[in-house]
Image 1 (tube, one colour):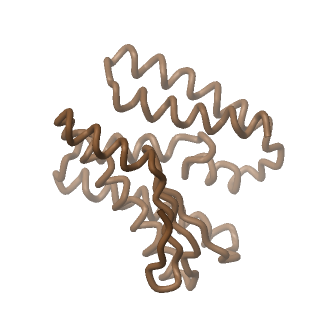
Image 2 (cartoon, rainbow, N blue to C red):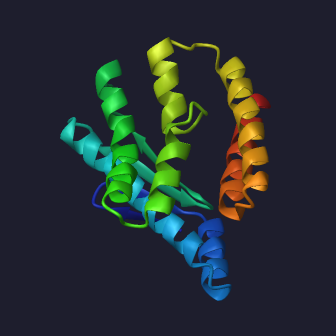
Amino acid sequence: MVFLVGKVKVRIDASFFLMLSAAALLKIQSLLLVLLFSSLHELGHITALYILGGRAGEINISFYGIGLKHGARFNKAREIIFLIGGCAVNLILALSGIYPEINFALFIINILPIYPLDGGRIAKLLFGIKNERLFTYFSFTLLIGLAAFSVFKHSLNLLMITVYLALFALNEVFR
């Protein structure tokens, strides 16, 4: 499904509706909350983007992920502020006591130096990483550790996020 909100193209993948339906039917409230707070995370990026003078071009919503595309050409500092905008929302919500376990988890996951997460993109900017493939391998290695941790902690939500990110990383490697 594709539609416009003002001049912003919004694309919602069928996988999002499947996940939302499954969460509602199976009464998995935590998954619905993760989707809600992930959306607020992206609104943090959008807010930072507009404050910095950029404009959203496209928002893609799919299984466990919301992606924002923009054409703004920011310097390194402004790009980092834009990337921190989403993480800041989850941290503020967690510190405010609003579902702190979910928001703190989203904050921690997003600041990990794993590409394409915010922390991975910040690490690439700060350290001037040019070798995409090598950084993707590094990210995949961290994801293996995160998957092991999610199994150890019996966290299905974290495991699902890890699998999603691993599939993204594998797609990048074999591109």
